[in-house]
Length: 478
Image (spheres, rainbow, N blue to C red):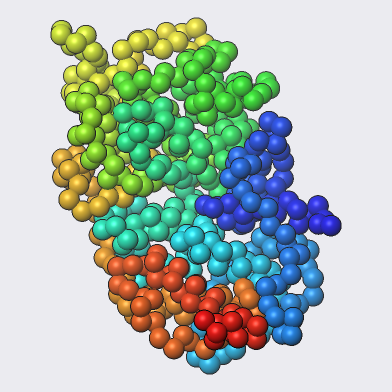
């Protein structure tokens, strides 16, 4: 029978290994502490239980290399790190302890799916030194950042590396996977929901819920007294919160909550949600002493698909993107302009920027606001990173002044370094020593990083199986 500690250990496709700490909503949501030290509320159907006491998948005739049993909690006290210094020619694996085996096994299982667990991104980021230096430099500018590369060049991996780097260097972060149907810029509430869902910051409890609780418990919260929305939420947290409140803050309801306004699900509400986001970023810097908030937009080339849809939807995409860029760039016009009513459409249009504003008044704690600005305060301390394929219409028309990082395909020598690193992790995962594969021909291919890694894992599986007498005999017969 599994003990309580091992039965609570799980793996998440994006966040890696963690331990269940708490459940709510009848177990539909669970609080998990992941390897990166952050506790996140995730849905139960997005995680998979792992048995720490699972027997190794090795021949019974092989001598076990597992060291003395340790407290299972140690499996995620420190992330397993493999660097070039571990890869020494001719060096055999020695005494792999249980923690290293468990983590190596989780890495291999993730790589079979073509993904790298978030806690191990830096170990598999090779050949990107110049691009990393540019990213670090560009974080000092008040401009959006574009990660540009062909399909398969590693844009998503680089975004994940940048996310991990930012999180570990005192930034709050959030990721948005752009989709022209579900998570589109012309659906600003969907963007807000995605930001809140993926929000993280380096703290004991690092999700959006705990971000607001940290602010509520800070003496510096007084700095938010002019932000009616966030201050209204903080005052509710002071009293007592329930699931309905957090559902509201997550953007999952269409009703008001106490004195807080209804969060409209309409294409023209870009200014409302960008204002909230800018307030969150400002608070992360001035209340919780973070550097600010970085938004990572993956699959941003989906923005170019808007030409397939109506002129109206395309205009709303541009309103959101231009408003967001304005906040990132600390455009002072967003603090001084007033919207004028268009004589034909009756829409509220910014006199200086031409941006469209939400056309209805907002009521917060019985106080009416005729319009809400795109920016709450400047500087906003907000950054935005977009991943695009080359030739994007959006980049050339709207993001032409952004800082750009171009990703080329990894060459064969860099893929070989990844292969050697992977071989070392594989040996620890299965207590199985192998020489370098006789040939990487047909496995490693320039421009096929993800495919190459999956092929390497499969090739190592075959090499391991060949060493088992029964399987070896079966392979010979075939």
